[in-house]
Image (cartoon, rainbow, N blue to C red):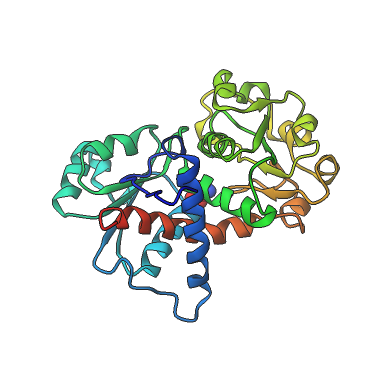
Length: 312
Ligand code: CP
């Protein structure tokens, strides 16, 4: 990395906007923060006096809690708004919500929304920094960063690896961010899934499409399964979950095609027995819980970097 490199992003809206240098710097920063979560007193004063609002219009366990833990470990004041408790339920628009939040002068807004582009819209109407915690089927940048951190930690590098991403590529913001991110970092991303769940333009993001799941998994260093997103499938794109599990579920037999030291990933939440068998999800090659642990470190790094930008 060049010595004059400076992280200059005010918002984290997508992996698309980040360079390989940005990604490397975020992962380095996250690695240095990981140790804070191992201390008996898991708190540093870095963001004391800063206000972080978590605006979640879709359900979340990992991302929301992980952002909140990250902000609290850095001593920021945190506030949560969910769809069920916000005035969006009374018909308030996202822009009106944004204007009202601006009046309370927060420093960072972390937003998850079912509409693609919502964080970008918010960023245009608010003085605070905006972090995209998942927008529709578009991007999930912090998930992709924690995935890249986990791969780099387990494999010692990203460049030159074969990453297999299996499942619902069409509806997966994790797939989109990861295809862009891993490709920027020099990996080769192979995707596979039912033909109805592979979008036509996915090759333009840099992915290699494999119609046979065996071709995607063969000699892979990383096998990542995606959740089947029943809530985003307006038409019946799959005959049945049982059929999906039979043809695209990750099981021990399929895994034998990957490199012997391949790691198994899943962004969660898992539909056990559909995207992967129980023994694969809980097996020794699984790094799914490491992904969750790294999520806190990555989100600490993002909060720190966008808040420290002006001071730097
Ligand atoms: N990976 C992920 O986004 O999980 P949550 O929906 O629980 O936040």
